Amino acid sequence: MQRLVSVTVIKMCGEAILITILVGIVIAIIGNLNGWETSVKYSNAFFIAGCLVIIAGASSRMGAGQDWGSFQMLSGENFRDMSPGERANFIVEASSSFRLVILGLLSGVLLILISQLVWYWFA
Image 1 (tube, rainbow, N blue to C red):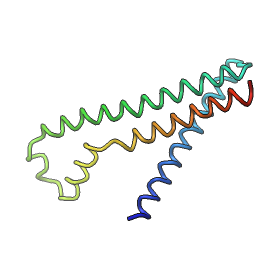
Image 2 (cartoon, rainbow, N blue to C red):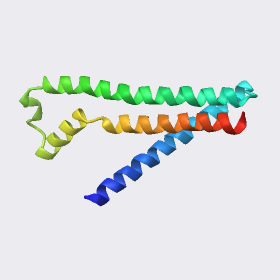
Image 3 (tube, helix red, strand yellow):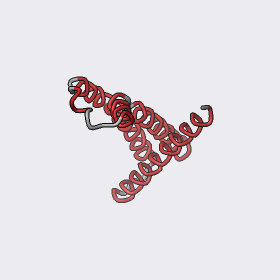
């Protein structure tokens, strides 16, 4: 059980780092195309991107809450053709989206930290 939790945490951190790298590449491309000369513009871009990623993660949870409400309105006839495992997976997918919230929070915090590092190192 402990190994499963640690593998899951490592995967989540890896995904957050990958998202952070991808967003950083996009910011670098946008900055290069717009001719940003100062580190303040890059720092602001990383900060805004971090805030947007955190908001996106939180909104995914709100959207899942609406899915849960529609799930509760389903009748039992919809589950007739599903196996017990498929039913359980459907219920878990409809009721838990904390993975995206955690992923958004981790990526957003990393982007905000990068914003601070860019500010201090290159200012």
